[in-house]
Image 1 (tube, rainbow, N blue to C red):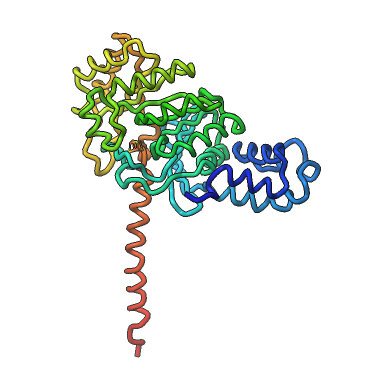
Image 2 (spheres, helix red, strand yellow):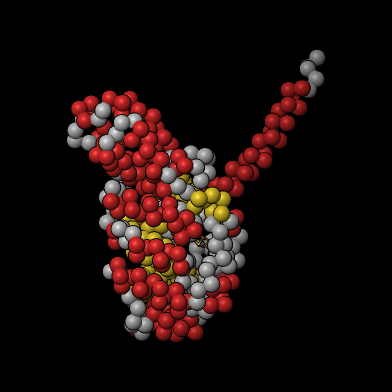
Length: 362
Ligand code: SF4
């Protein structure tokens, strides 16, 4: 990861340009709000030192280049999937959710390799810097208001923990996002359980559980830490009680894999008395992934049964399912198309060369 993608780089850049703490705070706050640095109440000419005024256009240009819009894909449910281009040409996905939410990415690719996820297909390509995460928020805010940020896009946040925690701290202090409206999502990593309680901004926690069966979980999430489901739930529950926000247990529903009556029984026992809510999310069928989405009636039956057994359960659509809604599907499709185009282009050039070099008409 390049130093220029991290928040401390921009703090230092501003300091070197003559910005005091208040000046730097104003520049970064307005940027995170998706606004121009001239948008504040006090005029830049009256407030900023001359050296900063001169350096500002270049700094603003660097901030703007961190995340630019590759393409936007509105969904029928009010969500909008954004394919975001980073300064080095890599792409990640952000999703604007209905009611002011935004899902952002923390890595390009992911090392966990969940079998039901397109992002995990190619492994980890690179880490995102903290500024690149905030830049996704800034970009999204140029399109609509954002009051909630969830780290549930591409990547496993605990594999990029320092940068994610830095971005969370910034968003919860300078970025205007309420602490309970920041959601750290994880497959369950001891390092995250250790670090989250130490931060001054304590986000809510989402735990990707998916099954109560430890062996099945190891197969579905091959490179997740080897904590058993009951250990994961105990750790998540401890954090939730300390920060005061319930755990969001995530369960991607896969037909014939984790939607059985035995799973309903086991999860009812596992989550009994826990401070949390179970989100059942029917799998979004993507190209090349060997899973199916259960019938909606089956999913609704699971949710009703768990509810009756005292588990707060919500059956959710994954946002923007009509526009390659699963994590990484949109990027995968665009990258595949671009790779195909790159492979085709030389052929076009060769064909043109053959035409150009052909015998001239008599
Ligand atoms: S579901 Fe999340 S943790 Fe699993 S491979 Fe995809 S991005 Fe990584």
